[in-house]
Image (cartoon, rainbow, N blue to C red; front, side, top):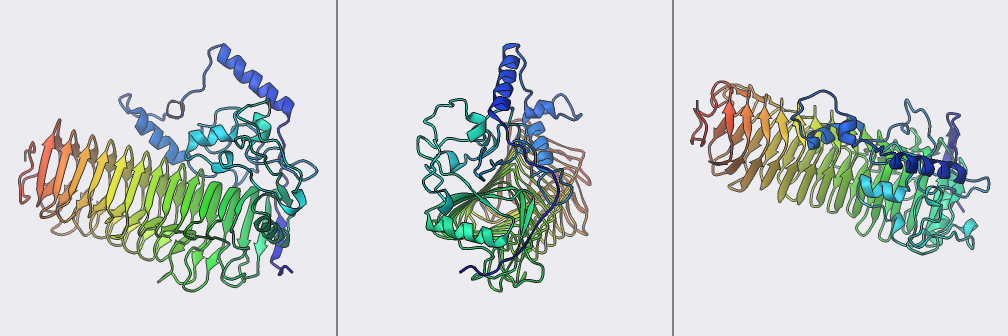
Length: 555
């Protein structure tokens, strides 16, 4: 017997049009003709260059592009123009998917999806490979048993756009269409769990409003491989309902969400993960998914406003906005593996640490993503790694206009190691130290820009290093326009604490300011320089006035 879950609504009138074989053949023929005539698609960086010097690197342009275009455009609740052909799975009149992972038309996830190629290929270009195309059959729902589709054995067979992906020679189950009714969604998940997994296709643009609390969750616990194609749908907790998150992925569960919005999840008291909890040995994979306005019961103690991860979570082409918690306003990576690419975090709030993401004991890799206007009441306006945390790797990303009420306006790192590569950290503010970055562990920063950050009442406007004698390396990086304006504060560009070791290679430190000398680099530890070093135009001094001299620095 299924408990009543609430009510469902359908908004908008846009119809998702399935791409036919004829459409796909024509698109393929057009692409082949273009190739024969020597016309090629421009690279993302070249296609979106907006001003700037000709000397700007392609990597820098790529970072700017992905920072602006990351996310889930066209599928969020407000301002949506509705789904487009190719953005999600269409279904036939029988309710089965005719296009499991996209029709082959360019999706909304970014320019790496160039023309009529399968989503399998698209996902390989956009980020971590979706296991849909690797791990055998999707499974079957109860109403689809015995109707196995033909997967393919590495051959295209003219079905590339229609099938969307291949399953390495294994049979692929048909998707069960879910009526615009929360009870039907609950029943479909129960059936999929019972059948050993399955694929669900939600009613286009429907809002599934959940009212019933099922052991702390709005939907049945995920214990099998289950894929949900949202088709622009929303799953929401009713505003006046009991407090519960939306999904729990337990051991053996492997949840994939596509073109879907989750909102108003609110975990119960002493529970983490406002929208999704990923338990150890659970897996979560999000693509073109929005998590908006999710929270936890008690923001003084509970973590992960949108997701609490203790398993393996992969996120791409998605948006996290206006989520809140104690630690990790959007995501708390408690002890798991977290991979984020081409994703946008905006307006998330942590009462304590990690306005967008807090890593406590896991490993986090972030590429081609944007963190903007997030806030932490403690450390790490955008990102925070606690002293229990592991590796944080940031590549080709932009962290801008974030605020911390303590240290690390952009990033505060106290874990085992920090790597920042080909990224921009700019216009962040810390009330205390480290306007851009607060570093208390071994770190490497290379090929990046750290500019116009502010530590309001502490030292290290750009970078504050208090790594307790550990080594920090900065290479081929520009540190400019940062400030430490507070009374008696130093190191507008970089502050190095007592006993800490900093190595600079081909670094430019310019136009930084502080209240007291030195305005460029204030060194209470040891600085070693290699290559071309330029430390100029800092106020009140470049390096003079710090405890220890900085090589290749004058004035």
